[in-house]
Length: 235
Ligand SMILES: [Zn+2]
Image (cartoon, rainbow, N blue to C red; front, side, top):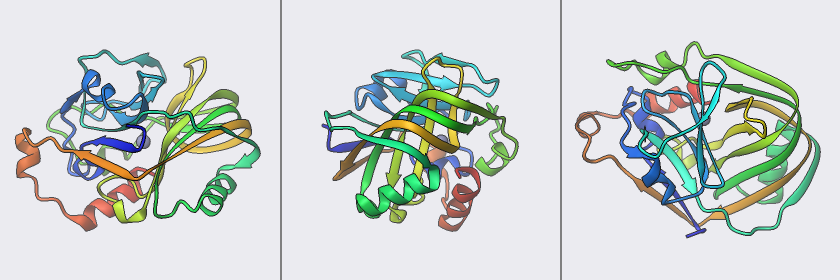
C-alpha cells in the first residue's frame, strides 16, 4: 500500500471546469492518509495529514472536511516509516534542486512531507466557483494570497515526472498547513528555517477516473490547453 499514489481524477479535468465532486472524502481516505486536492467547486485547497482532510478556504480559515464532502481531484498515499532528513536554512529553489539531484527524482513519483519552522511561507487559495463553472484559468485569475513569517507547520505534496503533466502537475505540487491551523493553501513560496523531510518514492501511480460523471464522459480534452493552463494556474 505504501508504494502507490492513488489519484482521483486528473488535473486536466479541472482545466475546462469539471469541478463537480466525484469522490467523497471518506472514500478518498480509504486510499491514503496523506495528500492534497481540492473540493467541489474548486472550493479552496485540501491538505490531508495523518488521516484528516482539511480545507484552506479563500477567506483564510481552515476547517476539517466532513466524510460526505466531495472532491473532483485529489492525490493521496499512505505514509510509511521512512526516516526523516534534517533540513536547515534552505530556499525553495535550493530545496527543490537538492531533492532533484541528491535523490535523482526526475523520473520518479515522490511524496514530500516537510515538518518544521519556515522563515517565510506564501500560499494562495482557489476561490469557490458556482455552476456553470468557468475554466481553471478563469477561476484562478484572482486568488487570495496569504503570507506568514516564522511559521511552524507541514508542507505536503508530490513530485511527478514531467511526462505526467496533464494527468497531474508535472514537477512539484505542494500545499501547506500551519500547526495552529491559521495558515494554509497551495504553496507559492517558502523558505525553510529548520525542518525534517520525509520523502517517499512510488513505483505505482494509480488513477481513478470519474467514469460515471456525464460531463467527464463528454468532454474533449486538449493537451496543449491543459499544459498551458497548468503552467498558469498551478505554479
Ligand atoms: Zn495545489
